[in-house]
Image (tube, rainbow, N blue to C red; front, side, top):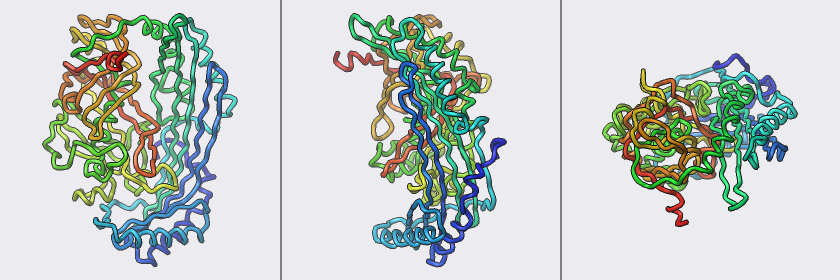
Length: 504
């Protein structure tokens, strides 16, 4: 168990054993090579404020069960919301019926890579305060107070505030004998300040850099991130941004803060190294990947300083689990080592297709009504042992730009050509920050960008960023995922002026 908490008794009181016996027994009787059952309860809450006034408070709960089978080498799946043994039997029968129909168009026999059996396994994520145990009035009161702090500052015209919380409970059982019970909690607070030039109507915004985290409500009150300190800095930073000159397009050395670099990792490394995408199985939603399996072990993804891992165990990671949705234990592995592509993110079927001895645990379904698909681990760029601080990285740059915070991005269907903007950009002159810049975007190909990485910051610069809403699959699913990284320096990167590019 990761934390000191237990899975909620109300979830464990559901008829999990009866559902398991009914579904898996019927699947065996129908000749399935494999069958698994998932029972899930997912509670969500989103609180939104505008100008320190409550705009909306929405609660949701998704409770249901699903049965997935491999019957004569073909997948079958069925899901429902009635938690009875009779319904579990019906879903097993329906899943087998789906497999029989699908067999006619199945060109690849489904075989699952082996995994040890976990007969009575429990895991709870590392958090202190269950956000759903905190009264709504207390949560909205804190968000109102923090919003008022920001709104009271000179020049701040409007403040948009949100706080999302999720509690995810999963029970998994399969015909091999694995039985897992898990509970994950995650939260995402965000504050955005807006200023308006009354004379011209022009406006600028700035959002907090605090990332979503696999923590509880203690994160919003200051454990793991100092929200009050960051909110106190935003008004002056926003004023400076409004007065900043527009960037001169050209090539610059780029120091990228973890608050920005995590998203570049997500789009250009995380998605590109999902094996189903690299094999072409995932093509209709956001494309495939340039990092195809024939390049494994030979593709120079980046400079020799580049060490990227896939990780389902990172403390407070959004993609951290005890076991994935196929009963595979969380683990850590290399994706890029010494700049070379050496690994992929896989589920049990993809692992078997590639002749791998074991899955690295990347199956996930975002609800009991969806089939598990291969999803992203916490894909992270590792810091340099004894590496420099952010200030020391900047000090080594004669002429460049320092990028802070994520904003918009664009990447092609092969995860290769991209451009990214940010929350703030600073001119670097003679190793020192020399004021903010505006209208900046950096543009590159994936291998050129990572090949240009010349300095990797030390562990003191490492931050775990991420998002709640990584999209994939059809019907579409969303998954939470974190990406850790240090500050890093990239040499001679192409910088665009976004106003000029837009023809304004």
